[in-house]
Amino acid sequence: MDTERRVELILKEPTEEVVTEEDLRKLLETNERPVAYDGYEPSGLAHIGTALLRSIKLEDMLEAGCRFKLLVADWFAWINNKMGGDLEKIRKVGEYLVEVWKALGVDTDKVDVVWTSDVVKDSDYWKLVIDVAKVTTVKRMIRASTVMGREEGEMQYAAQIFYPAMQTADPFYLGVDICQLGMDQRKCTILSREIGPRIGKWKTVSVHHHLLIGLQGPGKMGNPVESKMSKSKPSTCIFVHDTEEEIRKKILNAFCPEKVVDSNPVLEICRYIIFRKTKSLNIERPSKYGGDVEFWSYKELEDSYRKGELHPKDLKEAVARELEKLIKPVREYFEKNRKARELYETVKSFHVTR
Image (cartoon, rainbow, N blue to C red):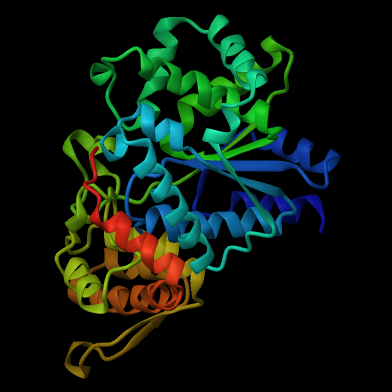
């Protein structure tokens, strides 16, 4: 596969930003098998943003010839007080999430699953963390702490300072060339990129993917923390375990103003998930409203919606049907696989804390 095709795959949506495209191209020209990674906190049940959207980007990276490492960031969730700060519960959630990846068809033989709880046993890791902290001001570290999904004003405990220092060190300990994480992790991926050469390491490439907006629509002043799909707000996200009825109910209640395409969560699902997984979207409607219509690209759908040619309810019904098709295999996997089912039931019984 030539370099341009590999770049094209990595830039493919849901990728939103690459820092920098020039560095990415140089990397791919000199390295046939660069290492990329994504990390996630085990903090509750998986929704379509953390599961479906992430798996789509993971498939792109694998096809582009990358070796991929999935970091189960259990200690990060512990620092962030997820699952009430109970590390044993967090571990169970991590095991459950690995099963979610398998249910989505992620080939775990092609992906290295790494646990932070194993990484922290190595003193060399902590040396890297200290190296990072020694060349970073306290002010910069606090600014980077917003990757935890919290505002700067919420930084109250000394342990929270460790979080960005550890995340900044992770790529170097894991031997990573490409940090492929969500846009909300940008402050740490850029910090890794800047600090690498200063501590005798390399300059990583940052590939940031889009964060799905919650079904409630944009938050106050477009606040990304309030706007993004979150498992702590169950009615505003689609879980990979939701039934057909639950999916339909949530989508029908979603924010989706007529003719409005910006910050429209239903259209975002079309753009970043449905049109990445299917070739077209068929809208079923009575002949008196124009009859059935099929869209073969997201742009075509968006243009039609903006002009008012497509009613929100018709769009929602179609999106609910397509999501059901994508989620059904995950539900069935958890129904048939005893280990996965037991993990799901255990995690479902936990109280989720923000």
